[in-house]
Image (cartoon, rainbow, N blue to C red; front, side, top):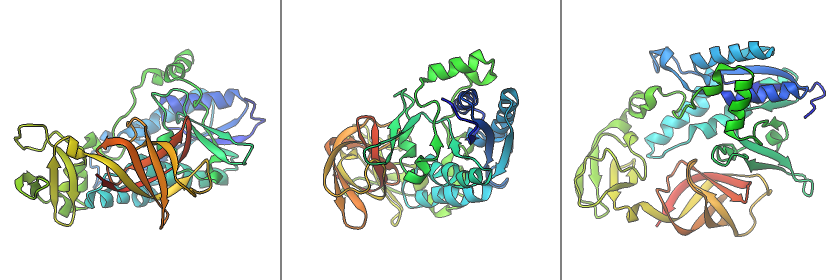
Length: 366
């Protein structure tokens, strides 16, 4: 890979993936600039700031600085706190207050990494923005469209959280580790003597200490932590919930209900402040409606297609029919019922290793 001294800005998180991505590009002849995004919330939200983790926390910034120094590349810390609060955190608590379960990583990629940071990169004269995502970008020479493809390491594939990228963004993004396994990435880091070679991956949402959603949300949406009834599908009261933000569709643990069979959350009604529970079978759905669509391999969905659909990041893709509806929506009918179709999450459509597009789940149907 020869860069011909092209200038690139890499989102340097202090983790092994982004650091190795920087290594690959520097060795390929690119002029690499490392940028770490400072996005942690105000102190009143996270009073013990040293506990703030994730890809852009205090410790991550220090690790990114050390990595940049070892690689011999310039490094900047850019304050994106306000835009992150507006585009990611505000959406997070608004969605939970509606009884929905958002994916803040998708919002961060859409509005922060490939939005605000993308704009800053252009101001620095960069030709491309770079991240350590396990995904690939290719151009279809037949129709001129940029394609988003799964990462070579299927276990680490992150194309799902990148489905909202536009053609303009895709044309200016490089994903250098998309063709590598995670083991190979760590091997490269070990060979360079980078301490982050064995750094574990963060599984928590970056702006919530200890992954404690209710404590984080109660300041902003107190109505969402108000106790209310737990119902069955017939409307009988079975118990009391702790506030709708403590629950998500498909949840089994922590319901506090005694029953002959395992019970799952099947619906959350924000207006009535109720949680509905039912059997595992009742937690399955046959179809969904999605909106806020973004198409990648095609310009627009004109007719019903058959594709593999993924309804959560860790969800296994399943066969489905995707039909366009009025109002820029689609109906998705699954070949087999799916567990815990969750409003607020994304549904992403694939053909083999290529992402066709995706959208946000609005409602499930059984």
